[in-house]
Length: 339
Ligand code: NAD
Ligand code: DAU
Image (tube, rainbow, N blue to C red; front, side, top):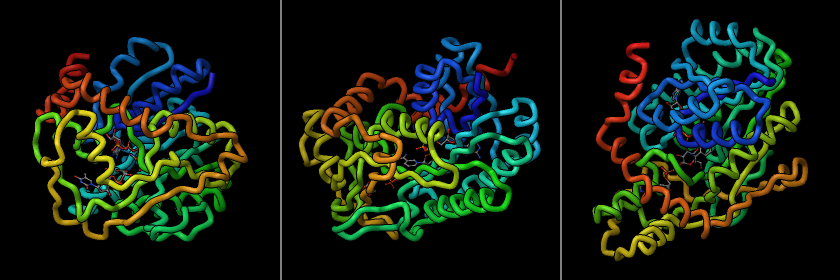
């Protein structure tokens, strides 16, 4: 039985990753460590406690709290650490960078220290394509490009990537980094583009499109990303970085129109608003390295994936309604108060 720590497991990708791992790796015992910030929803992982009582457990903790992290590592003797915990929303980082530095930089340093101290066999750090900066209309991000982050969020992620590198070189930690493009799928917090637009279109509220809506993102279905993370954890070479992408470049306005079309609403709901400061124009991934070295490639095509995703939000209205009402944040207290 491999002992695995997943941090940030109550967030969007973490939830999907836990479900993927528990269904596909029967010999992995997983601890989900999450602080339950506004982006962490314990309700997402509730069924896992029931489905896999022997192989799944939850710990509420802050990755930047060195004392608690030390205790957790001492208790569990992890073989593998997968770090997804982060502040992840660019717009929030523009409003308040401090918490991004604390979690995304200091938190990673605390985890790396614990991984070295307790001889973790593999440390997988989930990074992002945003560390490369912004592309013009040509080209794709390759792993050997220099880092050129443009937002406090992406700068904090880039700093973490450099810390991982330093711990490999200095302490001999066996670590790998994944950098992925924009994910979409179930359980994404409804302030990110796709779920926000679905919810607004459903209520016939305005859909706020930044700038002229022509910024381009490469969209990947979250399950493809999760499969890649597990593959890199198992087969990735120490010190290597692996890009992942969906091969599905879309202008934001195309995404918004396809959501409106799916819901049978008109384009009148679109409202162009002031652009995001420092808004990266285009992201596109060259993922030929992971394709040729590990045999990974995305399996979901965008048309099927987006339609499946929109339907998930429409069929799980109580899930996002409880987030919008703030109810989900009381869940931990209700669930654990008397335990
Ligand atoms: P998310 O915001 O949905 O979830 C983040 C999770 O981390 C939440 O559950 C939150 O409670 C937890 N968390 C935050 N601060 C913490 C702390 N100090 N200690 C412990 N837990 C804490 O994010 P996501 O979209 O699921 O992204 C997960 C990871 O993947 C992040 O590292 C992000 O940078 C990276 N990533 C995201 C995307 C994307 O499109 N969403 C793409 C590439 C990479
Ligand atoms: O590329 C990977 C990154 O993708 C991850 O590292 C981040 O954690 C994740 O949040 C995401 O970042 P983006 O900034 O690309 O995602 P977001 O959903 O915030 O925005 C997607 C695009 O849509 C971006 O160009 C901004 C635009 N947008 C977003 C919102 C929320 C709008 O036009 N209107 C909006 O209301």
